[in-house]
Length: 259
Figure 1 (cartoon, rainbow, N blue to C red):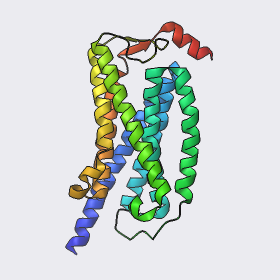
Figure 2: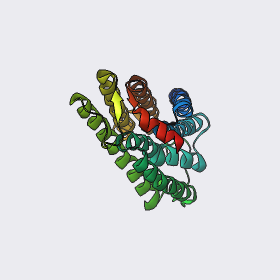
Figure 3: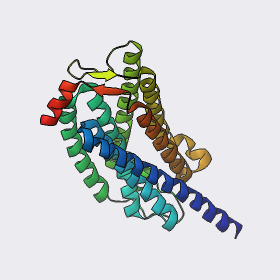
Protein backbone atom coordinates (compact mmCIF):
# COMPACT_ATOMS: atom_id res chain seq x y z
CA UNK A 1 0.00 0.00 0.00
CA UNK A 2 2.78 2.42 0.96
CA UNK A 3 4.69 1.57 -2.21
CA UNK A 4 1.62 2.33 -4.33
CA UNK A 5 1.10 5.67 -2.60
CA UNK A 6 4.77 6.59 -3.02
CA UNK A 7 4.71 5.64 -6.70
CA UNK A 8 1.55 7.67 -7.30
CA UNK A 9 3.09 10.68 -5.55
CA UNK A 10 6.30 10.35 -7.59
CA UNK A 11 4.33 10.12 -10.84
CA UNK A 12 2.32 13.19 -9.87
CA UNK A 13 5.52 15.15 -9.21
CA UNK A 14 7.03 14.04 -12.51
CA UNK A 15 3.81 14.97 -14.33
CA UNK A 16 3.87 18.42 -12.72
CA UNK A 17 7.48 18.99 -13.79
CA UNK A 18 6.76 17.81 -17.34
CA UNK A 19 3.60 19.91 -17.56
CA UNK A 20 5.47 22.99 -16.42
CA UNK A 21 8.19 22.34 -19.00
CA UNK A 22 5.47 22.11 -21.66
CA UNK A 23 4.06 25.50 -20.67
CA UNK A 24 7.50 27.14 -20.67
CA UNK A 25 8.33 25.66 -24.10
CA UNK A 26 4.97 26.86 -25.47
CA UNK A 27 5.58 30.38 -24.14
CA UNK A 28 9.06 30.33 -25.69
CA UNK A 29 7.61 29.16 -29.03
CA UNK A 30 4.94 31.87 -29.05
CA UNK A 31 7.50 34.62 -28.42
CA UNK A 32 9.94 33.41 -31.10
CA UNK A 33 7.07 32.93 -33.57
CA UNK A 34 5.89 36.48 -32.90
CA UNK A 35 9.42 37.78 -33.44
CA UNK A 36 9.65 35.86 -36.71
CA UNK A 37 6.34 37.33 -37.85
CA UNK A 38 7.53 40.85 -37.04
CA UNK A 39 11.15 40.68 -38.24
CA UNK A 40 11.22 37.80 -40.71
CA UNK A 41 14.55 36.45 -39.39
CA UNK A 42 15.10 32.78 -40.05
CA UNK A 43 16.74 31.91 -36.73
CA UNK A 44 13.53 32.89 -34.93
CA UNK A 45 11.57 30.39 -37.03
CA UNK A 46 14.14 27.66 -36.34
CA UNK A 47 13.87 28.30 -32.60
CA UNK A 48 10.07 28.26 -32.86
CA UNK A 49 10.16 24.80 -34.42
CA UNK A 50 12.65 23.64 -31.78
CA UNK A 51 10.46 24.87 -28.95
CA UNK A 52 7.37 23.22 -30.45
CA UNK A 53 9.33 19.96 -30.47
CA UNK A 54 10.38 20.54 -26.85
CA UNK A 55 6.72 21.15 -25.97
CA UNK A 56 5.63 17.95 -27.76
CA UNK A 57 8.30 15.92 -25.95
CA UNK A 58 7.39 17.41 -22.57
CA UNK A 59 3.68 16.85 -23.24
CA UNK A 60 4.34 13.20 -24.12
CA UNK A 61 6.26 12.80 -20.86
CA UNK A 62 3.40 14.44 -18.94
CA UNK A 63 0.87 12.14 -20.59
CA UNK A 64 2.95 9.06 -19.81
CA UNK A 65 3.41 10.04 -16.17
CA UNK A 66 -0.33 10.68 -15.89
CA UNK A 67 -1.76 7.66 -17.73
CA UNK A 68 1.18 5.29 -18.22
CA UNK A 69 3.62 4.65 -21.04
CA UNK A 70 2.55 3.16 -24.35
CA UNK A 71 4.75 2.36 -27.31
CA UNK A 72 3.18 5.14 -29.38
CA UNK A 73 3.70 7.78 -26.67
CA UNK A 74 7.30 6.69 -26.25
CA UNK A 75 7.88 7.00 -30.00
CA UNK A 76 6.54 10.58 -29.89
CA UNK A 77 8.65 11.39 -26.84
CA UNK A 78 11.74 9.83 -28.40
CA UNK A 79 11.58 11.43 -31.84
CA UNK A 80 10.68 14.92 -30.58
CA UNK A 81 12.70 14.94 -27.38
CA UNK A 82 15.78 12.89 -28.28
CA UNK A 83 16.19 13.12 -32.06
CA UNK A 84 14.89 16.41 -33.47
CA UNK A 85 14.57 19.26 -30.97
CA UNK A 86 18.24 20.07 -30.34
CA UNK A 87 18.96 19.84 -34.08
CA UNK A 88 16.43 22.58 -34.89
CA UNK A 89 17.73 24.65 -32.00
CA UNK A 90 21.22 24.34 -33.49
CA UNK A 91 19.87 25.53 -36.85
CA UNK A 92 19.11 28.86 -35.19
CA UNK A 93 22.74 29.06 -34.11
CA UNK A 94 23.89 28.29 -37.67
CA UNK A 95 21.71 31.10 -39.04
CA UNK A 96 23.16 33.55 -36.53
CA UNK A 97 26.77 32.53 -37.12
CA UNK A 98 26.86 31.99 -40.88
CA UNK A 99 23.92 33.90 -42.34
CA UNK A 100 20.85 33.10 -44.39
CA UNK A 101 22.48 31.42 -47.40
CA UNK A 102 24.28 28.73 -45.42
CA UNK A 103 21.42 28.44 -42.95
CA UNK A 104 18.87 27.84 -45.72
CA UNK A 105 21.09 25.14 -47.21
CA UNK A 106 21.39 23.39 -43.83
CA UNK A 107 17.64 23.77 -43.26
CA UNK A 108 16.85 21.84 -46.45
CA UNK A 109 19.04 18.95 -45.35
CA UNK A 110 17.63 19.09 -41.81
CA UNK A 111 14.04 19.03 -43.09
CA UNK A 112 14.78 15.90 -45.14
CA UNK A 113 16.61 14.24 -42.25
CA UNK A 114 13.78 15.13 -39.86
CA UNK A 115 11.21 13.53 -42.15
CA UNK A 116 13.40 10.44 -42.49
CA UNK A 117 13.93 10.25 -38.71
CA UNK A 118 10.23 10.53 -37.95
CA UNK A 119 9.52 7.69 -40.36
CA UNK A 120 12.26 5.48 -38.91
CA UNK A 121 11.19 5.97 -35.29
CA UNK A 122 7.46 5.55 -35.97
CA UNK A 123 7.84 2.28 -37.88
CA UNK A 124 10.82 0.79 -36.03
CA UNK A 125 9.87 -2.66 -34.71
CA UNK A 126 9.83 -2.97 -30.94
CA UNK A 127 11.89 -5.73 -29.35
CA UNK A 128 9.41 -6.20 -26.52
CA UNK A 129 6.34 -4.78 -24.84
CA UNK A 130 6.58 -1.91 -22.36
CA UNK A 131 6.30 -3.14 -18.78
CA UNK A 132 3.68 -1.30 -16.74
CA UNK A 133 5.28 1.21 -14.36
CA UNK A 134 8.73 1.32 -16.02
CA UNK A 135 10.37 4.17 -17.90
CA UNK A 136 11.06 2.72 -21.38
CA UNK A 137 14.60 2.52 -22.69
CA UNK A 138 15.40 2.98 -26.38
CA UNK A 139 18.22 0.45 -25.99
CA UNK A 140 15.72 -2.19 -24.82
CA UNK A 141 12.94 -1.31 -27.27
CA UNK A 142 14.60 -0.33 -30.55
CA UNK A 143 17.30 -1.56 -32.86
CA UNK A 144 20.37 0.33 -33.97
CA UNK A 145 18.89 2.88 -36.42
CA UNK A 146 16.68 4.91 -34.02
CA UNK A 147 19.43 5.00 -31.40
CA UNK A 148 22.03 6.21 -33.90
CA UNK A 149 19.62 8.94 -35.04
CA UNK A 150 19.19 10.03 -31.41
CA UNK A 151 22.94 10.05 -30.73
CA UNK A 152 23.74 12.05 -33.85
CA UNK A 153 20.63 14.23 -33.67
CA UNK A 154 21.33 15.37 -30.13
CA UNK A 155 25.12 15.11 -29.75
CA UNK A 156 26.33 16.95 -32.85
CA UNK A 157 23.79 19.83 -32.61
CA UNK A 158 24.60 20.27 -28.91
CA UNK A 159 28.26 20.75 -29.81
CA UNK A 160 27.26 23.29 -32.48
CA UNK A 161 25.19 25.28 -29.97
CA UNK A 162 27.92 25.25 -27.33
CA UNK A 163 30.60 26.17 -29.88
CA UNK A 164 28.40 28.94 -31.27
CA UNK A 165 27.80 30.39 -27.82
CA UNK A 166 31.50 30.30 -26.94
CA UNK A 167 32.47 31.72 -30.34
CA UNK A 168 30.00 34.60 -30.04
CA UNK A 169 31.18 35.36 -26.52
CA UNK A 170 34.82 35.32 -27.64
CA UNK A 171 34.03 37.65 -30.54
CA UNK A 172 32.13 40.02 -28.26
CA UNK A 173 35.09 40.14 -25.89
CA UNK A 174 37.29 40.97 -28.88
CA UNK A 175 34.78 43.71 -29.77
CA UNK A 176 34.04 42.10 -33.14
CA UNK A 177 30.77 41.04 -34.76
CA UNK A 178 29.67 37.69 -33.23
CA UNK A 179 29.44 35.86 -36.56
CA UNK A 180 31.63 33.71 -38.80
CA UNK A 181 30.82 35.54 -42.04
CA UNK A 182 31.61 39.11 -43.02
CA UNK A 183 28.39 39.17 -45.04
CA UNK A 184 26.35 38.41 -41.94
CA UNK A 185 26.92 41.49 -39.80
CA UNK A 186 25.30 41.75 -36.36
CA UNK A 187 25.74 45.00 -34.46
CA UNK A 188 26.16 44.43 -30.73
CA UNK A 189 24.23 46.92 -28.61
CA UNK A 190 24.95 45.36 -25.23
CA UNK A 191 28.08 43.13 -25.12
CA UNK A 192 27.59 42.09 -21.49
CA UNK A 193 23.98 41.03 -22.06
CA UNK A 194 24.91 39.11 -25.21
CA UNK A 195 27.78 37.31 -23.46
CA UNK A 196 25.52 36.38 -20.53
CA UNK A 197 22.80 35.20 -22.90
CA UNK A 198 25.30 33.02 -24.78
CA UNK A 199 26.52 31.46 -21.54
CA UNK A 200 22.93 30.69 -20.51
CA UNK A 201 22.14 29.11 -23.88
CA UNK A 202 25.22 26.87 -23.64
CA UNK A 203 24.36 25.97 -20.03
CA UNK A 204 20.77 25.13 -20.94
CA UNK A 205 21.95 22.84 -23.73
CA UNK A 206 24.33 21.04 -21.36
CA UNK A 207 21.54 20.57 -18.80
CA UNK A 208 19.22 19.12 -21.44
CA UNK A 209 21.93 16.60 -22.33
CA UNK A 210 22.56 15.60 -18.71
CA UNK A 211 19.47 13.49 -17.98
CA UNK A 212 21.45 10.26 -18.24
CA UNK A 213 23.91 11.47 -15.60
CA UNK A 214 21.11 11.91 -13.06
CA UNK A 215 19.14 8.79 -13.97
CA UNK A 216 20.97 6.59 -11.49
CA UNK A 217 20.14 8.87 -8.55
CA UNK A 218 16.77 10.31 -9.51
CA UNK A 219 15.34 7.64 -11.76
CA UNK A 220 14.96 7.96 -15.51
CA UNK A 221 11.53 9.60 -15.51
CA UNK A 222 12.42 12.12 -12.79
CA UNK A 223 15.78 12.98 -14.41
CA UNK A 224 14.14 13.62 -17.78
CA UNK A 225 11.40 15.74 -16.19
CA UNK A 226 13.86 17.83 -14.17
CA UNK A 227 16.40 18.36 -16.95
CA UNK A 228 13.66 19.24 -19.44
CA UNK A 229 12.20 21.87 -17.13
CA UNK A 230 15.50 23.37 -15.96
CA UNK A 231 17.10 23.20 -19.41
CA UNK A 232 14.20 24.89 -21.19
CA UNK A 233 13.97 27.56 -18.47
CA UNK A 234 17.69 28.35 -18.80
CA UNK A 235 17.42 28.45 -22.61
CA UNK A 236 14.42 30.77 -22.30
CA UNK A 237 16.34 33.01 -19.91
CA UNK A 238 19.32 33.10 -22.27
CA UNK A 239 17.08 34.02 -25.18
CA UNK A 240 15.39 36.82 -23.21
CA UNK A 241 18.73 38.22 -22.05
CA UNK A 242 20.37 38.11 -25.49
CA UNK A 243 17.34 38.86 -27.69
CA UNK A 244 17.72 42.64 -27.60
CA UNK A 245 21.51 42.72 -27.39
CA UNK A 246 22.17 42.74 -31.13
CA UNK A 247 20.61 43.92 -34.34
CA UNK A 248 21.34 42.93 -37.91
CA UNK A 249 22.74 45.33 -40.46
CA UNK A 250 19.83 47.34 -41.83
CA UNK A 251 20.83 46.61 -45.43
CA UNK A 252 21.08 42.88 -44.81
CA UNK A 253 17.75 42.87 -42.99
CA UNK A 254 15.91 44.62 -45.79
CA UNK A 255 17.43 42.34 -48.43
CA UNK A 256 16.42 39.21 -46.49
CA UNK A 257 12.84 40.47 -46.31
CA UNK A 258 12.74 41.07 -50.05
CA UNK A 259 13.77 37.48 -50.89
